[in-house]
Amino acid sequence: MSTHRHLCVRPRAVRDRGVPAGEGFDASYAPRRTVLDKILVDAAAEDGAEVREEFTVEELLFDGPTVTGVKGHSKDGGKAIDHARITVGADGLHSSVARATDAVGYAQKPKINAYYYTYWAGLPMHGTFEAYDRGDRAFAAWPTNEGLTMVICGWPMRDFEANRGDVEGNYHATLARAPAFAERVAEATRSERFVGTAIPNYFRKPYGPGWVLVGDAGYLKDPITAQGILDAFRDAERCTRALDDVLTGHQSFDEAMQTAQSARDAQVTSMYEFTAEFATMEPPPPEMQQLLLAVSQSPSACDEFVRVTAGMTPPEEFFGHMQDRMSRQQTPDAA
Image 1 (tube, rainbow, N blue to C red):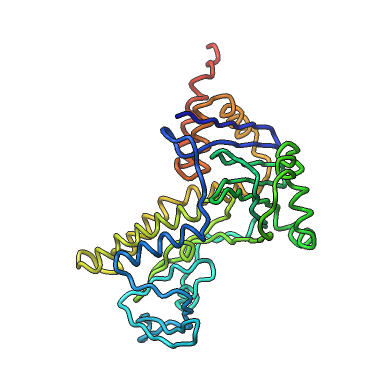
Image 2: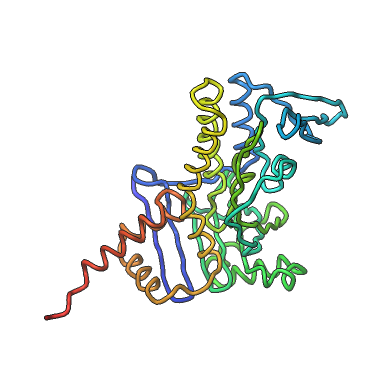
């Protein structure tokens, strides 16, 4: 199987197109949460989990400082109280578990960009994703299920108030900065309404007496590198292994969860910082422009850069490798 990837680098304009899955794959797709979540819920139920859909958690239960369960109600108003040795909050940015336990935040950064997205029919991507940087605007497109393509546009938070009154107009004005892509969108059909989001950047201490945070509830960054669900899967696996050590008596709760927190932070911090810098949409310094130009001239380097933005190669590994390559190619001055 073959793939095609292309990175066009200019001081104020970047186009990135490719399939980040790696060797042996010729297409990548981003399944919608409406599909992915059902797959996960059904799998959990098949493995014996008790699933309650359309259930609202009203409050956490405490015994002193320790969380002991939840209180909530179903859609029909039926009340329920559930006690648990450990309550896991996989409940996102506005986590009720984080709020009720006063989970401590650190390495926080403000919202960087506002994003608006929708889905288009008749916009073929052939299994590739495309991303465009146009100075103070950026947008990207991913193929998803049911023949739809998600197209998301972003602009700095400083422009949020000025643009919020005409989301559709500013969305298309952003696409117009890449005329060829805008023409493709003009021939497609928008299938859903526009959805907007602006996301803060933070780490939270992900555990305390009787409670744990997983995924966006414990760690979140700007979506420009689109790694939220990947981070959530990795975090869930890491947390599951830690809790297994706790419940089987191999480690204490604090020991296991401290180890999991340290492993999470070590794995994601470089991408967290890279994402925040990338999201500012500011021109890179001259040294970085030179490096990106070298990337654009090397198909293998292009492939690896796509994998960085897909979360498959750590930024420090990629840029360190590229700097070493450029240093070896430079001719030393004559003595």
